[in-house]
Image (cartoon, rainbow, N blue to C red; front, side):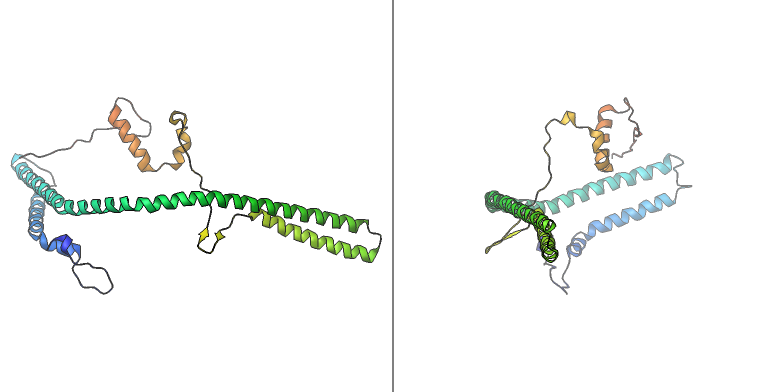
Length: 256
């Protein structure tokens, strides 16, 4: 059974074959070859004294097994490519199909969000200005009430005016708080909700002027390692780099 022909395993309580099950069944001869090679390699290693080769006679079986392993790994890689390429091609073509189709609605969405966004931003600004004006008038009213109460010579009337001034100050405080948040919430309409948010972003204008030292706290080890690899490839051991050990990693290979 081809992997692409394997039945779907979606849904609860299924007892259908998984992709791994299908692969194990289809490529069992290859799995057996790997198992046999691994057993012979383990036996060869166990036959060494203290895990080291003592002479040429002990060396040659390791070379032979290494060459056999290299050829088997190459064959497995070719088999993997032959198995996965049709699947990857199918995924690539599927992605290309949907990517082409999705462009139109995404373009419409983006364009209309921009158009509505300009209108919504204008309305939000108008709401903020109006709320700020209401709050200002309320503060002036509270101040006037307080001055009127302070100027009153009638004790009972003065108490009444003072209470009115306190109430006016409370209303003004509430309106000031509302003015701070005015125009910031979502706008609910009969057909949908409009929300606005500001995201900090950037645009690099002069790369040579960027102080890279300031970016160090935000670099991962993988980021730094990528730059170090490029440095070592370009300079080898001719230019030491503080904090980095530069050396040659000797690799042994077999050829039949």
